[in-house]
Image 1 (cartoon, rainbow over the protein chains, first blue to last red):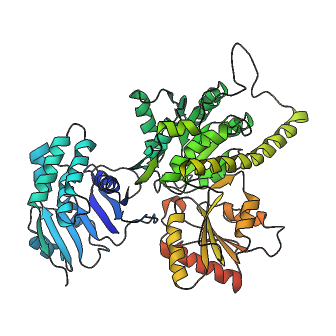
Image 2: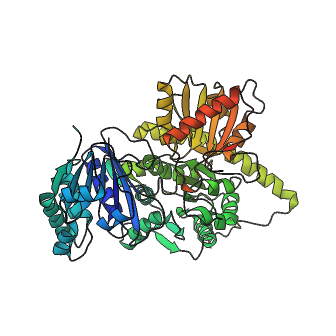
Image 3: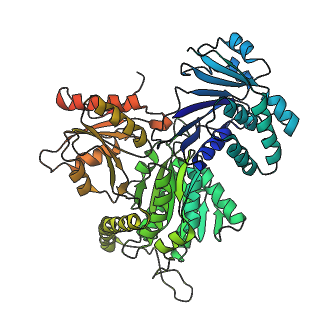
Length: 187
Length: 391
């Protein structure tokens, strides 16, 4: 089972990203679960969602406490939320940031994990004119861990978003190509 | 052919309602029920569901609309949560007394105060004597299945009672998981059109909800009680047919590794999924533990529970509701009452946990079961314990 925790700010598609990933995995015949950290919806406030993908049925209803992968859709939450909390040793951290993964790792003391960065905001602004980064970050995620087939994911994104589907698919593939990775895992 | 789909459980509930081809939906939106009614409102607005969607000005009015439409012979659905159910409370008793087969999705939410929008089961427990059939779903598939089953059971001529399907607020309502969605033909073959013998009809006037003086009231209530109890047999019959048609079995309790168990954990709703993992972990440690997830709350399946749980040494009941000033968790209390005249019955240990959306982790369930065993064997047993509370 792969467990993910996704950080961002309300309105950036944190919940939708978890949902798209889960639906895509389920369409591939896997088991999956996606849910937000429960509560009132708060645009602009730090928010969290969770996703689990497995080959067997998932029974737990716990929030993900020890993620294999942490996704951060908005680098400003790095200052207010301990996004590395519970990240498994040799886990993966994927951040929407302009810095290189090496610089980000140094700045935030990331050890024993793989770090990936991509300028998802730049990609989203370029393609859609809006800083909604979830589809770009989905591309970055699949670059570091092939949880689902990227082509299936792109196809789902095409149908999931009505008016902006083409632009979201562009963002997805741009990020998939532009994501930089630095591996600080212990071998 | 049914299709396996990943979708939010609220959407699965709305799909079930649409496949049941309801005539009237009357509701007032309230967190965390909103996604269900939003999906249904969209289906009606888009012409995908030929139903009357009534946005009532309150839940009291929503249930009043449901009573009127059901009395007129329309298949009727509503959904609410927590405080919405509380505001509806007066009319819940009316719907049952009038024997109207309204179906409701109750997205369990706690009752204020302190003000909270999160989930627990204090709402349904506050109306446990209202005369509705009450089911608890544990996952998305059960929400979908039970919603369709609820129409069939409620509308059966031998039943004619309203029915509610409880799904935990947020932990089920806001979760995406795979659900097997039946197709129109499959649902049609299971659920015939609603065609009641008695209905409000201007051409054939009848009185419903008439005044009953003391000379008649008790007789009517006795019959209501007896008939709600006897709906149990119809529920089992319908579940049997469901299994035959669609392969998924239902019973008043769904049990896991409980056959030889010394300690059985009993609870209702989504958290039983997490508890299941605690059972596996304790079994690995050599403890004989099992799980019983309660699916039917009303009519209360007394004999079934006594039979299924009677061989255990301890039943550890985890209630997500508090009977303030009362005698422990509501499910624990009824179980104790069920065992009161049974010789050599298990000790019932009552925990109250998971209030207002507080998660219970696997370790929490393990600790409660281990505690329950030691309470029952060695220590003086508290009447109930609120688990995981900071002092």
